[in-house]
Image (cartoon, rainbow, N blue to C red; front, side, top):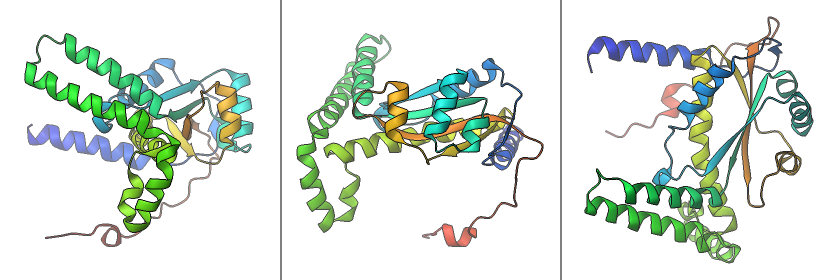
Length: 243
């Protein structure tokens, strides 16, 4: 990659990153559907463990449903004034479905050698077991006890809670891609964690075991939207350098 292209790519990323703010009051101007489809297409390229993509992106444009979801988001103005809402939903079951589809793709791929296919069969089989029987609530007490001895084990994708936490962590990559992709298109956003998961699950018709990771409000910032000076911890307090 030549240095000019590298510089242009960095400038574009930095511009989108610094444009992105949590906007809580949106203008009534609609977002072109093609722009949001493009953003969601890029979000689908986000990384995930084993490429299992254990999430769905529920895109809500229907005014009545948007209003009901805004109420389930504790009446937050960002949700009430948003032109579009994206609800990021994750679950081990979605990971299992992806594993099955990915394996079928690998088996039918003419450009993959037998050793590569064997690798994917082994990896996919492992994930299917972990996200299948490994997501049973029976594992939860064992994981809890193990984490008391070694806190790092609390992140294992085992048990009722662990498998759902794993799915949610993977979905966060797609959520961040939506925020930055929208900013690159000049679209404002506000990620929201304040909501009634029970009400949202009912409104969206989600199956049992689903985890609602975040609700993302999208639109264009209103002229009187509150945008304060951005504060972050100093970089030398965040970055721990090991030479």
